[in-house]
Structure formats: C-alpha cells, structure tokens
Length: 74
Image (cartoon, rainbow, N blue to C red):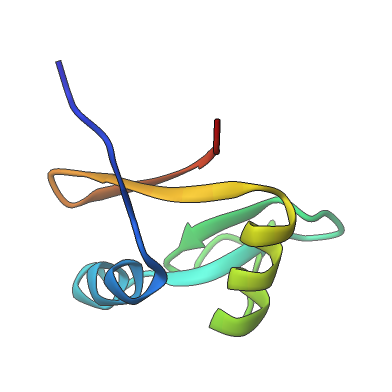
C-alpha cells in the first residue's frame, strides 16, 4: 500500500523542478494541477497563484515516492 504524506510548498517546488513540472490550472476553472506545460487544456500559473488557490480550496499537496497529488484536507 502506498503511503501519501502531506508536503509543504517548498518541497513541492523542489520535486516539481526535478520532474520538469510547473503549477497549472484547468482553463476557465479553479482546478489546479501540476503540468509539463504541453496540455492545451491547462494554463501555466505562477507559484503564488497556485498556493493561494490550493489554500482557498482547502487542498494539500501529498507525495509518495516522488509522485505528487493534490487532495482535499480532512
């Protein structure tokens, strides 16, 4: 079973940089994702906007084995 642990934004930035990922948002929505920037449905956003959106939506960044996932906090 894979164990997810919540990480802070600094660690998320580090992992994203290692994997060539950027913060993104599904165009026309408040849904945030990590993206390589090659998907036309996703627009790359700055880290400040990403962090504000994650906090406002009560999400957390979770990591397991170098993979990150955004999930609602309990």
